[in-house]
Length: 564
Image: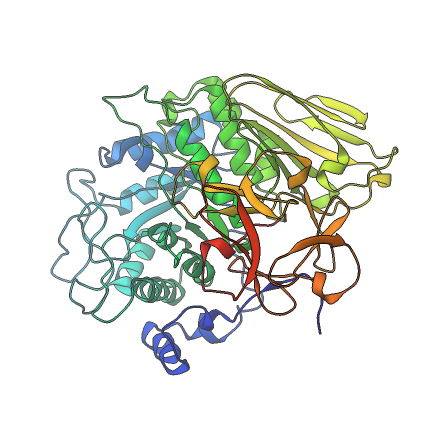
């Protein structure tokens, strides 16, 4: 029965495995993943990472230039600053902790220069501080730095996923980050299938040991900008709790400590925001580390990163020298009201309400009937903006009032028909909002965007907006780019609905007709009642007219991001 606008999904085992049912069954059997392939999660089992994970990782600050003393100093810093008490409670060691060779029994060996006492005493010391302990490994035969990986050897052979996971459990590991460098791809196989096999095997190994570990997957990041990216995003959630989708955050370098790093914050935010359809409690899109407060980031930029990650319900994993954070930066990173937006039980990604060349407006539904609104200033000059309840899908009536709590100043704005935003360069305003009963429940309202999946690697060129003119063009933040997704699945703007007609959609008067309903797939397609896809025609550096075409597989001109 047609229930209107809904997310189409496929069973876990049927998402882009090797072609044919037999190959699917063989892969599940070989990987030892019968449970995730063929069964539902065990009822009553506690959900891992029910809210986005929080903690600290060494990589963006130290890369390979760290020792056990640096790890423990930052753990102590989390406790001393109070950040641990605010939720930053998992300390994860990244690449370079191990040696290139395994011991005679095939076990991983800690680098004796970095960890002269081995890894277990470090884990015990971290646990003694009331913190959790995380470790890094790689799904390939070597890590990104050329050290011992867990995956199949180059050329094929037995992997070490189960053996390494048992070793991690013996150390007391609570969190595993599995990178994706140097994954062996057999002759005749595909890169996507090789990655799925490796991450499925690691997932099975985690289920086989008697210790819960949060599983952070890096697989999607190795497909960003390719047609397989969305396929990989479709299956990682079957195996782990969070995943990196793309580029790393800009690292700190001792020889260039003042190099600006905010550009990487904006880029990671840009490619993460449109992926809300893949996320739910227990499954998180990971936009990479919080570098706010570190060198190369101003206090305004620190506020911006924390607020953006919180609006996206992204993991909050600091990567800085915690002992060198200023009191002001600690206060920002430990802002309870903003952290509550990130850790909200609904786990919703924010909707992009409006975007132009200097500004984004975001809206997020929260548990308990409240909402969050944020205004980002990407430009070089201050901006002033007046927002109305209807901008966010509330009823456009004179009685609709919003009461807003400014989460930076802690001050309330009394119930009003508008929300005033004054935002400095590279800064962000963020409020928790309560709507008057007369406002009703907000509709799904905002921009419908198309992304180039990382081909351009900057926000303005990588994101384009659907306009009522019947084209896709550079986002301008105008009312012509404001859409409402109706309960029946219609795409409505300016009182009219987008309707496919003779291969070319047009705006017509809204009705209950079936041809005005669109179905939205997990891979991002907007499918008409006739089973064809809304398509942007022509080069993506020009205004692209719309057409209705046969649905392809992961065609960038048919992938859309809708209001949540």
